[in-house]
Length: 487
Image (cartoon, rainbow, N blue to C red; front, side, top):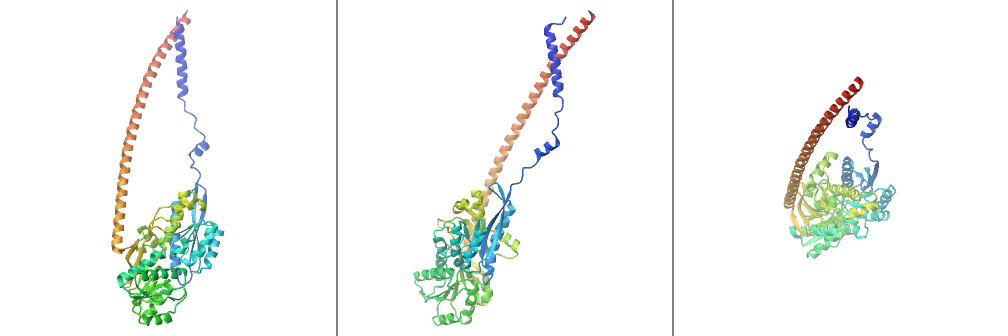
């Protein structure tokens, strides 16, 4: 006879066998539709269009400078779009809206209102101070951040507007720079000053005159033309009789070129000096190569040649010409607006404006930060000359200190090399850390595999013993059943 205990063990063995058989069955495969839904990529973020306005003269005598400005802004927008930027959880496509302000002060506010009506998120511009200043009042009222890449009149950022910025220096920095270089290098006793009666030209001429007088130079009574003057013979004939050692002109290249040409034709031997508006290659065309030889001029920022290599190459590839003057700055101005939006994670002007005011940005024209007025901190001034038919930088003026351009570039290259080396070391440290982490992860995986293998072996032993016992009990059950049948 089989004991009650053996019958129970037999029942357990049968139950275990049935359970193992059930477990050995394959789980039903999910329906194809459900599997496809599980593996489907998440939906792409919604795309929004963010408009950035750009304003400059695209017609008239300085249209070449206006187009250069626009090219800088356009390049920045296209590069940003290529990156696929996401702001506030939405993919952003930036659109540049370009307008021609015709270099006219009364057209500035009209263009500004047009931008406001179009609901642009920010504005890069304008080129001329005389147009930028009246336009800035409209942007302030509309709450639209604006960054100029070329307007240098101090009045722009002294209106108390919190939405107005510039990435170039001011005329009260540029004027002393060109004046001090003129005095140091040419030692003039008498200087004539002429301006074009614009906010930019007159403002810069005022700063130059102030600095010259502070240096003890005799400054002749001011002469004045307009932004459209091309015939300077009457003014130059009068000045020729007074025999100045130098003549400074505050205005743009479209009028500065004819001034220089006519001065040389009248036999004036004085040194001609200009501000950034006439510090272009166009001067050689307008004045003639022979007549333009030896002129000096200033720029309220680093020279184009010193802009980042990436910018210079990208600009040439995109537009098939070299940048002229302000495009590195409008490129930076556009990227500043975009970077501020990213920092604030919003394209709402009211929300990203504080980020713009406090931003620290590495741009094509160098490191950029703003002071409390919206002016660029520690802006450099560059002095140029035309020598052997080539316009080139000769000195950098920063914080009242003049450095030869060659020395400035050597220092910049050394700093770039040091930064690259530091980044390399940081990369090596990251790689080393990653290697250590990888090694630790591999060890952890190996340990887990070993533990799993041991657990499986143990489970197999237990299962084998249980199966043996079950078989033995089952045998006894069968034998018992045979005995009962025989009886």
